[in-house]
Length: 322
Image (cartoon, rainbow, N blue to C red):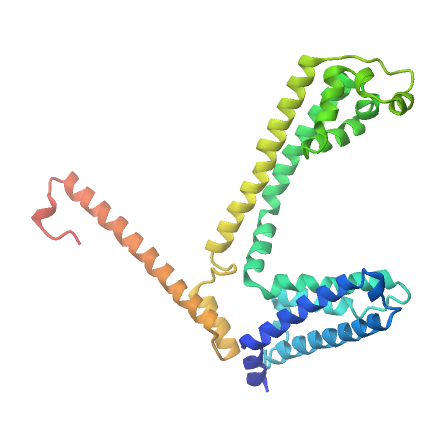
């Protein structure tokens, strides 16, 4: 029974079926957002029926994978991706009662199973998890950038633009809008030309009598240009750089997706009792990496030996180097 389940789970047809079920489930949840496909309609009832069938297919998939582990069924839960799949399926069985919206959101979670079915998606998720510590450092740098410029903006523009820069928290929200480059020119022009020229009557009433229109072309230009250049062009690009570096490390390092050592792959094969085509290719790639590493070591040793002989006055023609 275990070997039969192993062959089923490892087959390409089974994986394509699961992928099709995930895509179908996500599409059906999207259809439920339209009134003509709501659960109160006849078509909506059929959609709910298909969703239930898909859910039980996922239950069968989990059972097959557990049985495929043979005498060690707990090995299924040692795989983080299997645990993720099992959690999504289990959430759909929770008693939400009359909370129909929550129940629909639970069904929507099934679309996240694409992360576990597609190997490239697993690499992306692993890279993001690996990058979290570095992203935290970049996030602190970005927060410091926001704080310094928010304090400066409050001091410089509070009188002219009290709605946007009257308080520190308002300044931070306004600068977040500026950092997205969405409508930042209105914020800039208000400080550049003065609020009397940019405020309409409703905003003038909202700002109150404390507002003093003050055009500051020089400080406004220097402030917003430096803020956007440092924030958008430098700090935010650090996030991209960290994630790209993490993806490269995830693909190259042993023990991660696409980078397991030969011993780890062989241990998994021995535990299952069979080898898939992907595992065979990974095993060959792992052996090639090991051979490449050995060749690099031998090349370095040969170079050092040549250097030592030359330092002793022995030319390479005096005898074999190796």
